[in-house]
Length: 155
Image (cartoon, rainbow, N blue to C red):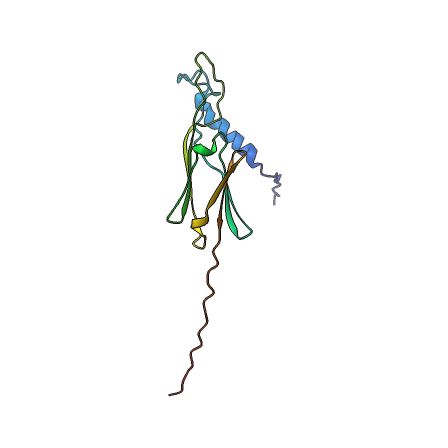
């Protein structure tokens, strides 16, 4: 009877993601005939990372929107869905400049989340600070249903 010994090593998610990114870049290595360089390849799409919190009776949605000014953001609520929209534009395109790597993604973005029903959507507030927009919406006090006792009569 043989005993199998396995080394158990901790899983490093970041290392795995880096390895996967390197594998994805391989089609862009020089010499493959497509004219792209591994340093200019980017298939990333715009995403808006958010966190949703509750503090002092308010639901707060904080979204990271670096490179956007407050007047370039559109925040709206329709049918209990909060939507954050905008567009990250390139400042200017210079001629005769070699770009070796570009990890910024430019273009339009939109992020929508469904809101709970017990929020006062008439009192939505949005504040922009240091590349983050924070939307706060107070909860409404739902009336406590009154318990009505019903007399049971004998027949």
